[in-house]
Length: 135
Ligand code: CO
Picture 1 (cartoon, rainbow, N blue to C red):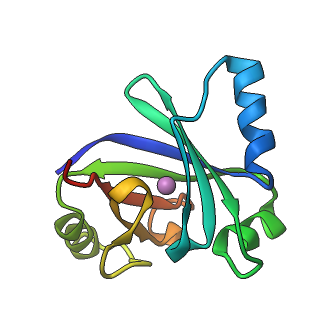
Picture 2: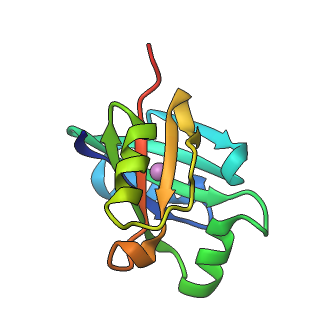
């Protein structure tokens, strides 16, 4: 049901500055940049091989990403696992003993449906489950 590492999320204070760094240091560029109102963030997706980096910049002080940066600084924020059925993957995770942040999927970037597991369930690592939109 879990198919791949869909992306790796990095919390940043300034998305444009972070994208410039990735371009200058590694020569990689964002395929798309968009706001995700449900998470109060602006994100840039940088494809690398079969996976992507997602740079996540908070757009409001009460965004959970803003709180993350305030307490822990910029850095590795979450790992997103790709699935063909996020609803079923969330259910299976809960049945397996994980604590869910999202009982139901919410809209993610680029037409995806996503749900987060509580990091306490998964060795301090925030895990996102993501289902691609139908193209
Ligand atoms: Co993500």
